[in-house]
Image (tube, rainbow, N blue to C red; front, side, top):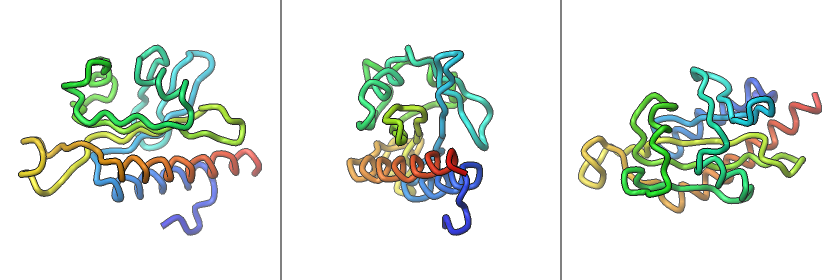
Length: 157
């Protein structure tokens, strides 16, 4: 739950953990835009990952700040940049990315959810990874709005 988690450093990790459970995915990441390197850098509980905004996926999310990106099968997506496998340090089968749009109306943060999981291997690939659904995408957008509230509130404290 989020009770008592009312700062950026406590609220966002709690949101990430709840998102991981709700979306039944391998991992949920939170990235902050770094103006000095023009890239998104991971924050909280992960080894540092830096995503250059020139990567097509990041460009899509930052130029359409109210839309998520749902890549259901990375291996069959012609726009996918294979360097993301290296950046995340693991094979990515499915990927859901949502902007975190704060009161400034800019995309200063993004969230990424990797590898939808299922216990029922008959409905997924041999690795247990399956595509994110439209319902997952809608839920992730709501989660990103909640994260935006935490980021906005943290600047007021």
